[in-house]
Length: 78
Image (tube, rainbow, N blue to C red):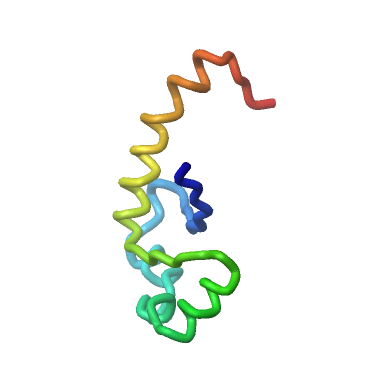
């Protein structure tokens, strides 16, 4: 079983790109640094940093995957 824990920062759809970029980490290489990877691995986590576009694509894929399952099960948000 592939279990993933992910973190993402979301903003309203019409948020200007300049504002979205300001919220991104200044150095995306940080999670890929060996010392950071080692810290994560000690906690059982494999970091896979990506771009906002990659996160958006992943969210779309997950929505397509899980929406039918949720609807078929009759799950409703309160």
